Image (cartoon, rainbow, N blue to C red; front, side, top):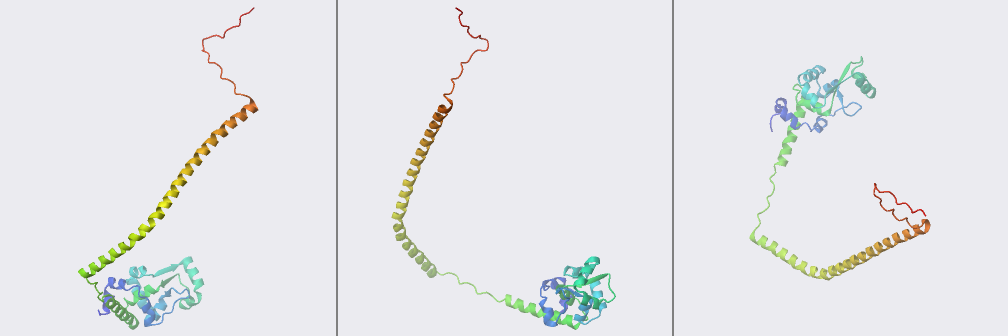
Length: 242
């Protein structure tokens, strides 16, 4: 197992175990704000059994990294809304009121445990993390059983099985032949009936058109014959006067 100091020096190593927030409660019971998500600077200091100054100093040195893992500062209306839901514990931590409030999540707290040097609780968290990671690697690195290469006998057995399956399919296809033939004949007869029906419908449509024309003539009389076409320069013939 690598020494727990590797977490103090390697950002990549810290990031690789950032999801193991369950380690915090296994080392020491963690008390959260009423929202169940955050802790204040005083609560962080109480958990690691150090002073507020040590936490604030660590926060200033590693602000960017801690912010990536959940640390944020509330001000103005956001602070007033948060305090209205967490008033009791916030008032105990800051009885005189504050212009801002720094909050930490479980991930931030785990991040601090991997950075805080002068804390026995933080050292225990680092040791526990490395133990858990080493055990996980040991489980992952168990060699898998390799599948034996196929032999000539096994391939011949598989080929025989395939041939027997094909032999069973042949009689089934022969039995289905007459059924498929009968279905095909029925479909052909249905197509012929549909064609005949279409021809009858077309004839009925033409007959209805003729009947409609007859009804119109009975009601309005026959259509007038078209007037003969006259050339624009010609004059109409006059009747002879007797």
